[in-house]
Length: 193
Image (cartoon, rainbow, N blue to C red; front, side):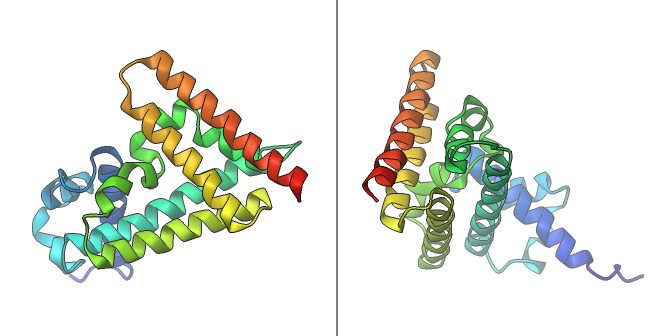
């Protein structure tokens, strides 16, 4: 009996979602195809019916994860009733919740260190997705891409450091300082414009 129409696309989506979650939490190198397939509720034997190799999956997981992050940040922005919507995005991105929920968080701080050692295919997709994130941040903040790049760099760097330390007070302090300086960057740019 054949599978229903759309079955293969649905299964592929489950694999990509499982991979994005695994890569966000543990990076690329330490995650195996069998682990990803198990996370999707599948056996690893079916992997090659959907992907040529792990690199292709990494690229697809980056696309998926950035889309997911943009949707979450857009939702946070839409809930902001007063003031700049970018402030709601900064508050969400640099929150203890986002810091602690690595499996659902932004893939940029999770993979940036590893991507430089990845294939050209993966680096190209990561670059495209980073540019998409910069465009999203810049448009929401109503700033040019140079300021948007700086803002995203502050946010990603702050999140990386806050996740890296063992001292919870220092981690919270890093988040707080990052939020303040990210917002100062935007307000300074708006005043100068």
